[in-house]
Length: 269
Image (cartoon, rainbow, N blue to C red; front, top):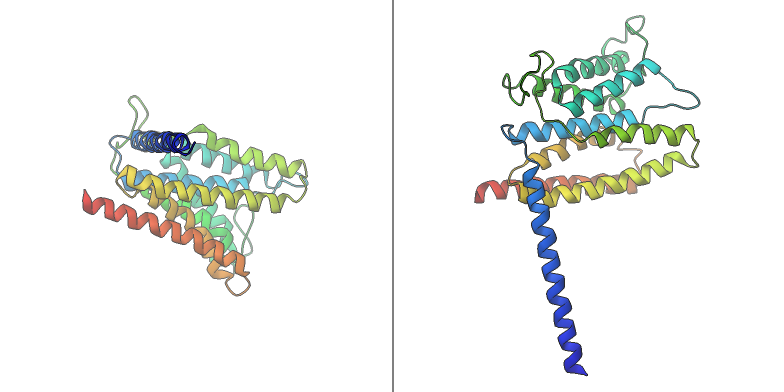
């Protein structure tokens, strides 16, 4: 009986190792296949990070008890669509305008008010940091080498300077708004828990994808996404609970580990 069990366990262990190898190999191939040709790794990572920040920011816009800031919400959707399509020359000015308008009380608070009252106004750095991050990243991508990544036949001023991202990004804001409009119980709690889970899983995937990609594009995307959260944490450090501090510390450690892995991969290459 012992001999039979040993043989069975050996077969299971062999199958387990082969399955892991197959999954790891498929993951590596998928990661490398998603690297756009002719686009530097830093530009691809910057684009992905800006898109993630924009999607999360737009998804959190208040729509209860009715659609607040209708024009602002529409502009946010246009910004996300522009980033998904890779139209950084469209996204850059939109994000810059959004950053300036939301920061008006801090930038030019001594004036009578904003030039156009279409969106929220903030007096601290945390809420406006996402807009400035997206604006800065989009501007860098918009002014990179002329013609990089442009599809044939597209107009020069409208041409995409980055590869097209998955349209599934566009699903996130409507789903979050639907939960608000449906007055889902404890929406803030549910949103916080789901977002935390997605962020941890995503950063773990980044850590796994970095050696497969053999560059730091995923680590850069994660770092860009992390910037607004760290700004908010720094501004509210004295009132942040231990759990929140530990959570952001975990995200920072995961991003830092991805950078270390990326650097080692470049040295070996």
